[in-house]
Image 1 (spheres, one colour):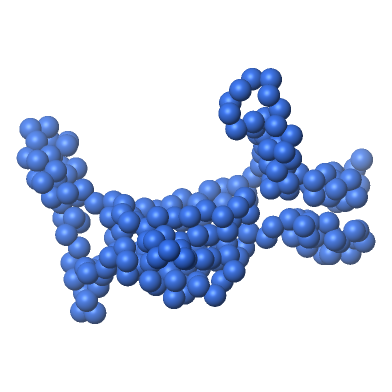
Image 2: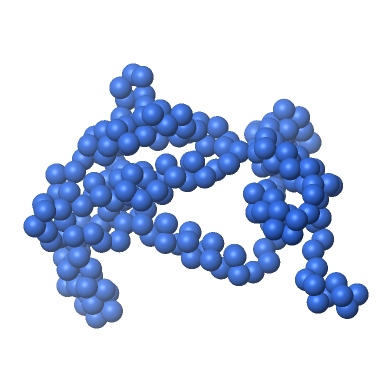
Amino acid sequence: FRIEQQEYAKEKIEWTSDIGRSSSDNQPILDILTKRSYGIFHLLDDECCFPKGTDESFLLKCHYNHIDNPLYSKSKSHEPEFCIRHFGGPVWYEVPGFLEKNRDTVKGQVTNLFKDNQNPVIAQMFKARSATVSLPIENDGKAQKSATVSSSFILSMNMLIQKLSKNKAHFIRCIKPNQDKIPSNFDLRFVSEQIRRLGFLDTVKLRRVGYPVKYVTKDFTFR
């Protein structure tokens, strides 16, 4: 909606500008996750670089950086978890195992087993990987950074966004009739909630009062 509003403002087109205000702006949530220096993904990567980093120390840093954010909350029962209020509702994340999963390393015994494999292709793959299993320590006490699950995810998403921005994308939104996967069962409340969260109503309003069909000046002049 913001892109649509910016385009109308650029073209000096008058329209009903209050459309889209009821829709959630996901930028604050994206900032919690991906903002440099204090985003949760970056905090996780930084903690993975510390040889003595733990899931508990990562959780403490998340609390320290985001506890004042209304979209973030910690467990009142002191459980090792945190909550993010996404556009679809609150989601609780259990922290135990975060660092190990994010490092995505293969245990040394497995690497040693495969690097001595009789198949030269497999052996070469694991010989190259064995060099990165042990992270060398830098002067500041941190291990040198290597590719993690979160950093790879951010890189993949940025590449996808770049590809989508260069093309005219069309999206198909699917609505579930019910949560029980039962045929011929239409749960009105469940369907209505999906329509609201996906911004369908604002999209329909925008298409109704806005200008959904767009032509470049050359094509419009030719027609």
